Length: 161
Image 1 (cartoon, rainbow, N blue to C red):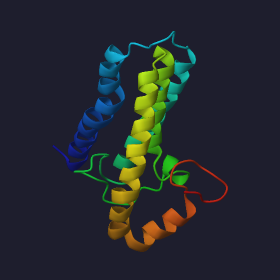
Image 2 (image 1 turned 120 degrees about the horizontal axis):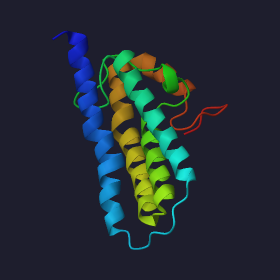
Image 3 (image 1 turned 180 degrees about the horizontal axis):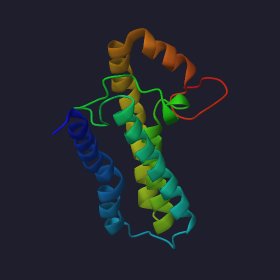
Image 4 (image 1 turned 180 degrees about the vertical axis):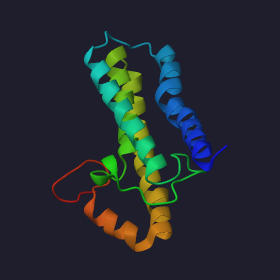
């Protein structure tokens, strides 16, 4: 098996393990516990689809530009600054959260809405306390230049944290 094939399989496996667990399996389990569900809204389909597109785009960029996967145990070998990473340092997390918000809308679930809020807090803490220091240690000046020009979460005219 070629190195490219092995990397593609690792990228697929990490996608199936991490985002699928957080954005599909956990929400499905939480829906079973949600006694307060209301009628869902069809707009959830559009939000869910947007989140999935963002997520898949980011996984592709990690594979193609970074030569690695989204998994913490198999990170990109190069700093990924292509695609959506040109406008957000963390579009993959934004994609996961958008997917879950879409599910919350689609199923009328306050529990999933709360799950999305809790995950947003966890993601922020992970990024600030672990990922950014690691990226700084791995990529040095390249990371510093990138972080000084690209917003952590959402695109903006001026850098914001």
